Image 1 (tube, protein in one colour):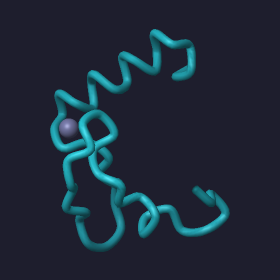
Image 2: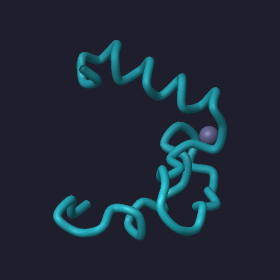
Image 3: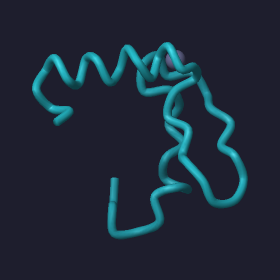
Image 4: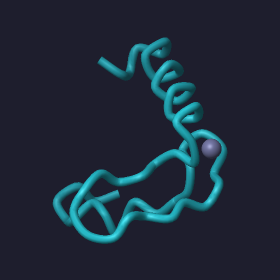
Length: 54
Ligand SMILES: [Zn+2]
């Protein structure tokens, strides 16, 4: 992934937790990266436990 370019169009790989397709919200705002809040929590917890999420 190239972080020097606009992140939004590149971030359409599906849920980081389970890979389910995501529907990005049009316009400015947060990029959806999880299909559900629960999967967001699971992912962040995993990152934190692995020492990556500081
Ligand atoms: Zn998911």
